[in-house]
Image 1 (cartoon, rainbow, N blue to C red):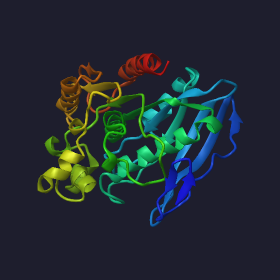
Image 2 (spheres, rainbow, N blue to C red):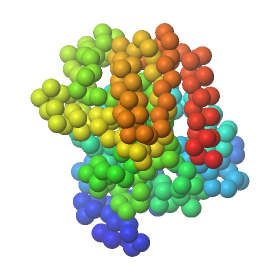
Image 3 (cartoon, one colour):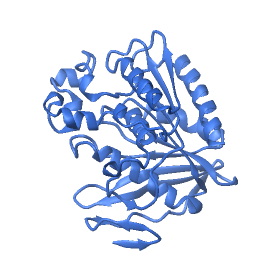
Image 4 (tube, rainbow, N blue to C red):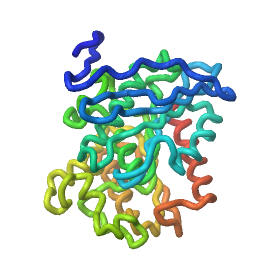
Length: 299
């Protein structure tokens, strides 16, 4: 289905929503439950958008929640709840986006979904008060994987674009921040004892691929962020706890090396003593570094 101007919708979808009217809340324009994609057979995919009021087009941060690709919500996440007021206070708009979990659809559905969110936000940027040239992504754990995938792949890999939502606009981001994220899916350890997946005797990355990871090496490579960096990949700021047993720091080190090999810009902040989740002091420090990074690349 063509919408003109190079914008199209696949025939197995209903049209995405148009930008709704915002509600004003303490200097912030808030738009809730925007259906940026409506693939038939699935629930609508939603995002919430928060923009500073009374300013020019704002740089936008797409926040992607974590949860081993199998749990969580764009409505509430510990990182998202912490980031939102900090980013808005610095003049950034924030879009909290939803994606299909691994039991709903295997990879690359999750990447298709967040790319669709970026395309919708870019296409409607003028109406939303966001600058389509200044879009970044920020996520932790599985959300960090998807944020890094947005940065690494850009528009360079047509098979990763998908046909979810609007197609035609670019799905590139200008920068991304990724915390404690899986990178090489084939080299992840089993879930640690404190994980609910350990108690189930399941590996959530098997769910992501729709089969045991070691039985589908080609698909595991396709789901691995280190497969994709090019010289045109967006700048990437990585942070990783040195004592992360769920996703070892070697994962981020591998992505840093892949970026370096092609001459793309990436930095890794190693957090001594930290595990998979950062304490308040580490989080405060890393958010401060993240804001500095965003200002330098979205100015």
